[in-house]
Image 1 (cartoon, protein in one colour):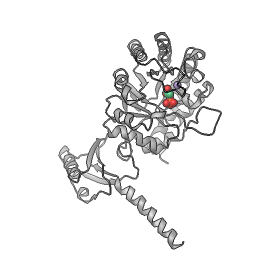
Image 2 (cartoon, helix red, strand yellow; image 1 turned 180 degrees about the horizontal axis):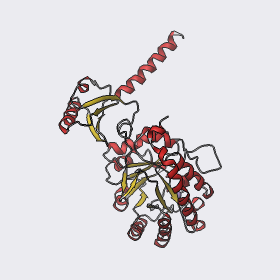
Image 3 (tube, rainbow, N blue to C red; image 1 turned 90 degrees about the vertical axis):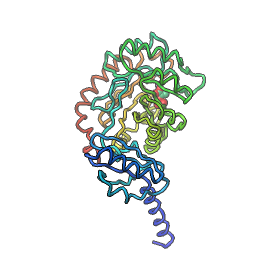
Image 4 (spheres, protein in one colour; image 1 turned 30 degrees about the horizontal axis):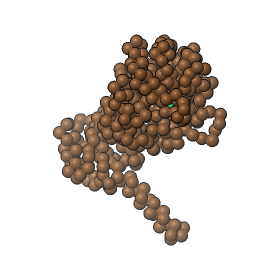
Length: 367
Ligand code: PEP
Ligand code: MN
């Protein structure tokens, strides 16, 4: 190897080492007392960093935030109650499994996502009228849906397409919740409308096109409502997890990730469902991950097969568009299942989930 090349290799090796050294976690013993945790926090903060204790099922891990360079771990290693100090290799910290080895369970208006059951989220793409929303909600509830989803504010590619009913749509969703008991999921397209959406919704969706809308992510971080964060059209898994990190860093740890397909050269579907993202995200992060096969497929006939595949690769739930009159739907009719098909899907995946559930445990998923 030439001297110049060797020098470049050395330089990039040092760069990698420096990045690794920047991220640090202090893992406490299971029996660590609150005083011991407070003492570690005090030492970290005395150096000008922020310490964020994250209670896990077994023990507390303390995350070091806002350090610009490497943190000297030596004063922390010997402190009472400290089990180990870990160098985190990824730029994301709070979302990372290194920080919290156990799966997070997110409570959406009383429905738990990530607790060993497959969560079903269903409803029309857009809320069109009370009658439409209630008709679809009754169907999906009877078939086994846990949460009702619909759009009141719709991100549409064309400014001439139906943009949603706005607040009237939110009011209709609230009536659906009242009648059916299903908590509701709906999208906030920008930080200005967030307050309004948050008032009505049990879970606020951040859509694909907004995955890196940092003002919106910061607003979501200040919310007390769980956030459903869809993957950007061309986002890498790291970018997606960093977007989730924004929300958690803001103080909201209730985040559910949603894979909805990425842009590829393929024409046989609207997007390409990246099923390989599910085991990767589950290995990297403790956050639950669900799959939206409808926006990936764009065509009704692919939705059930893709849902089955998503269950087999270990997702925690599915979000599916359903319409009782898809041909008359004001948006995304072509990918909306008929109520009978949704019922069929629920039956199929219930038994599939039972088969694949044991594989959901991380020991078997880590390759
Ligand atoms: C939606 O969920 O209604 C939607 C528009 O999806 P996406 O943001 O994934 O395109
Ligand atoms: Mn849609």
